[in-house]
Image 1 (cartoon, rainbow, N blue to C red):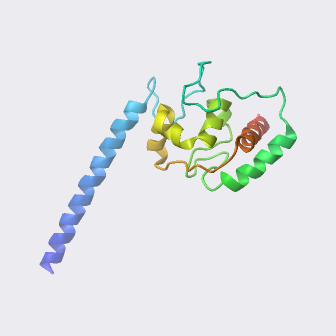
Image 2: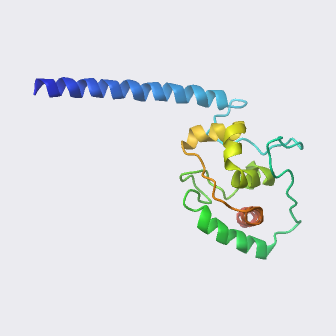
Image 3: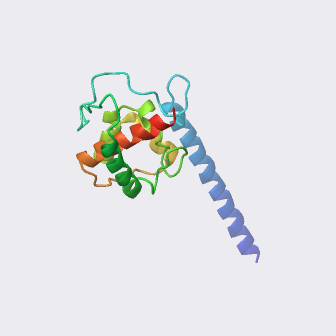
Amino acid sequence: MKTNRLQNAALTGFCLLVWMGMGLATANFLTSCAKDGEGAKSDAPKEAVKQKPEYYKVKEVKLGATIDPALSKQGGKVFDVTCTGCHKYDERYVGPALGEVLKRRTPEYVMNMILDTETMIDKDDTVRCMLQTYLMKMPNMQVDEKDARAVVEHLREVADKKK
């Protein structure tokens, strides 16, 4: 009986130390991800730089002046099948809320995140910081470029309806 209490106390102490160590490591990483006093929890503002990173597969996404309803409908179907397991429009779920993602990120960024998830995780600082917040890597959903573009159009429509 006494041995069990000692083992439980030792295990509890060890778990507490691990938990505290993880908390300190996470806090340290989050502050290293902070930009201009903002923590990694808030998504960084939309990229203002016109030149896209070398690792982007999709360098340019041409958006129409108005939303294409047919393309958005197709994107909604793709979103429902491939994205809703981890994302919601208006709240954090497994991953970040995507209802207004195009206010924070460029269409190119979103397309590359959908199409080339592994490269974005490996090379993009914003994605690596978000990984520390969400603690889950986005899987490659095997979506082709046409469907990814449709998802972007759908997300444009979702954001437009919020106005």
